[in-house]
Image (cartoon, rainbow, N blue to C red; front, side):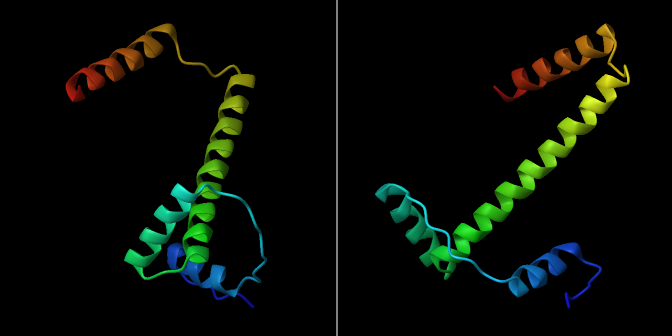
Length: 102
């Protein structure tokens, strides 16, 4: 039975630790493996933990982006588009922001 908590980050960690583990193998080049080992040592963690965290973070990002794309496609299918003026203003704001940071 999973532990239920109000803090979703805490719940995710507890829930993650209770899941059954499976072995997956893959290949990385030696430079990446050496960097992974350095970071693992600095964080006092093992490779498996860091790889698991990296995969978890990657999946969260991908799932979030996919959900966002699906929502935007629904909006487009419903004819909900930004006007030419709204689009122009958004691009101008972004260009001005880039000029400030350059």
